[in-house]
Image (tube, rainbow, N blue to C red; front, top):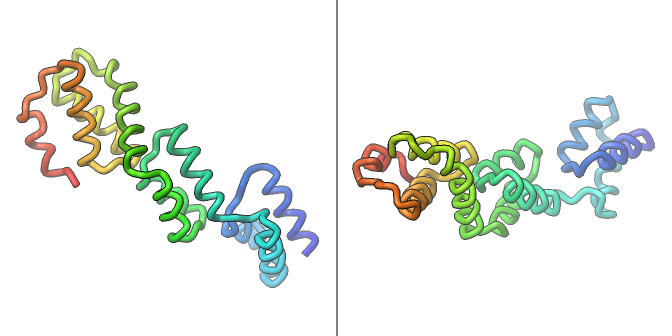
Length: 168
């Protein structure tokens, strides 16, 4: 157990970790399951491991720093072993308005680099940027259309006709 505590403390000093990540690290280092379980339970009891807090901090950080949408955040948290209920709670804290505002900010940053391109190419690039960040296509195309219209670009309905089949 002393070895397990030492491993966990070292890992937690470097960065916050989920219970699953710590359990995997202990297993990989040959710590017996009963010792690992005892140490992880104790760390959770004293608040050194809190997957719900980890999920909230992860969502807050990755959404605002990288502009990731709920879908991408959900995948990242699952990969780190966070429980689905805790993921849902953390992403619900984000809210759809914050997600839409972040999508608008991402499109505004990318908009200038697409000037001079045909409308269809601009739409593809802008929507592609949002898609790679995990935004649903319906939201992506709505935000792109709003940004292009606000810029005064001529965006005919025909530019979006072929894309409407991909919207959520």
